[in-house]
Amino acid sequence: MEQKTIYDKPVRMRTMLKFTFPTMILMIFSSLYTVADGIVVSNFVGSLGLSAINIVYPLLNVTMAVSLMLSTGSNAIIAKKLGEGKGEEANRFMSLVTLVTVLAVGVLVSVMMLFEEPLYYLLGSDDELMPYCIEYGRIVVPGAVFLALQFVFQTFLVTADRPKLAMWLTVGGGVLNIVLDILLVGPLHMGVAGAAIASVTGQAVAGIIPVVLFFDKKLLIHFQGPKWEGRELVYAMGNGSSEMVGSMAGAITTVLFNVQMMSLVGEKGVAAISAVLYLDFIFVAIFIGFTSGIAPVISYNYGAENYRNLHKLFVICLKVIGFFAVVMFVLSELFNRQLAMIFASADPVLADLMIAGFRIFALKFLFSGFIMMASSFFTALNNGKISALISFLRTFVLEMSALILLPKMWGLIGVWVAVPISEFIGLLIAVGLLVKHKKVYHY
Image (cartoon, rainbow, N blue to C red):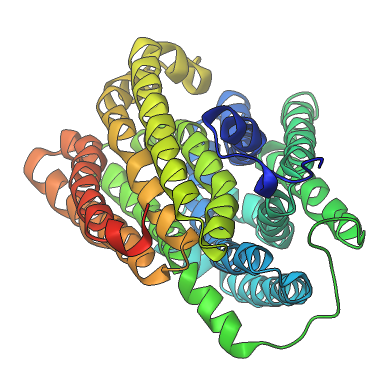
C-alpha cells in the first residue's frame, strides 16, 4: 500500500530530516523579516534607526507569544487527535484556534497603538529615538495580525504534512521583504517606514494565502465549522505556555539588554546588541525549525501509543541538535568579523562592539538547542507544565537574573556573558527533567 503521509513512514534519521528541512528553512526566512530590516536600516539610516527597531520589537514579541502559545499548544492536541483517528475533531479545533488567534492579537494591537509613546519610553527609547520608533511602529505593529497568522498557519501546514508548502510561502514572503527593504529604504529613501512596509507586506503573503488553502478538504487538516471547546482551548493555551513564556521573556530580555547597553555604552551599545540578537534569531531559527517540524510526529506517535517510535524520535532529536549546536558555534567564531560587518560596514565603533560581544555571546549555541528540544518534546507529549517550567526557569529566572546582576559585577562583559551562563544552567535543568520523566513517556 502506498504511504501517503509522514505519519505512515518508518521513523528514520533521513526521513525526519527530509520532513523537517522545509520547517528549518521557513523559520530562517521568518527570522529574516526583522533581520533584513536591521541590516538595511543600519546601512542606509544608521544606528539610530537600528536602535529604534530593536525598541519596537518587544511589542511584536508579545503578539508572537500569543500566536505561538495557541498554535503550538493546539497543534500537539490536533496531531494527537489525528493519531487517535479523530480527524473531524482536529479540523473543528484548528478552525477555532485560528479565529481566537486573530481576535486576541487584534485586541493586543489596538492597546499597543493607543499607548505607543509611553510604551516606547518604557522599552528604552529616549527623545532622540522616539520619532524613529513611532515611524516604524505605526506600520509594523498593526501588521502583527499577519505575523500571527503566519506563525499559526506554518504550524498547521506542517501537521497537515505540507511542510514544503509552508516553506515556499515563507520563503516567498521573506524574499519579497528583502527586495522591498532594499528598494524602499535605499533608492526611495523611505527610512524606517520603508522597512516596516517591507516587513508587513512579506508577512501578509505568508499569512493570508493559507487562509484560502485551508478551505481545501483534501488537506489532512482543513477548515471545518468551528465548535466552541472552552476547556480544550484552555488546555491548549496551557500546553503552549512554554512557547508563550519564551517569546514574552524574549521581549523583556530585549528591554533589559537595551537598558543595560544604553547605560553602559549609549545608543551605539543598543545598536550593537540589536545586531547580535538579529544574528541569534537566524542561528536559533534552525533549532526552532527542527523541533517544531518534528513535534507533530512526536504527538502523533504519542497518541497512537507507539513508544518504540517515540524512543527513535528522541534519539534523532539529540543527534540533530548536537550536530547543529557544534556547527553554529564553530561558524560564529570563524566568521565573527564578517557577520558583524553585515550590520556595521560603515561604523567601526559599532563593528568593534559587535565583534567583541558576539564572540562571547555565541557560546550559548552549544546549550540553547538542547533546552529548546526538551521544552518542545514535552509540549508535543501534551505536558505543557514541564515545558513551561523549562522555559520559565531558563528565561524569567536565569536569563533575567544574569542580565540584572552580572553587568553590575563585570560591566559590559557581564552583558555579553549573561546569556551563555544562564543557558548552561538551563541545560542542566532540562537534562534533569528529561531523565526524570523518561520512564513515564517511554522515550
